[in-house]
Image (tube, rainbow, N blue to C red):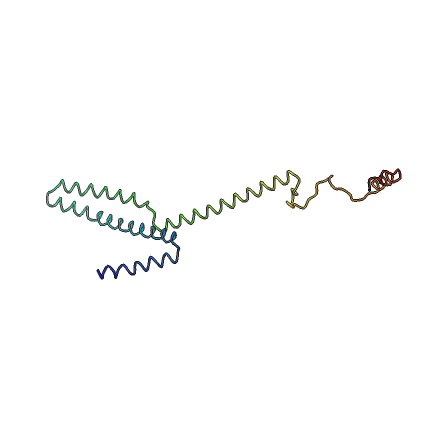
Length: 173
């Protein structure tokens, strides 16, 4: 009992420290990667021992004259070899973390590209509507033909003519 407490206390401290450092969600992801890595390492170790032992056991069976058992050990060694080759493609914790970082970098690049497309679309629409300069993309523009002069000689003559006939006085009231 004291041995299990002696092992449990540091493990509990490690778990609490990890949760405090990374937060609950990140700590859970960290432990999943850690346990997956440990299980993967244990599986690889057992597989390596079995691959090492199967030809030795097959040789011992042949020396004793038990050819059926030797064939079973030989075939099991071949099967274990192919199983090991299949599990070499299982990613390690570092590879999983690298893939996650790559995925995050790709997501950020995609968001930046989408923002650039939105900005280009906005500029095209504003230029088409005449509200933005097509060369420098300034929004401080005035469309040609829409400017109004506050006072001109022609307007002065018209208002003077209206004033002479009395209409201008009536309009000003």
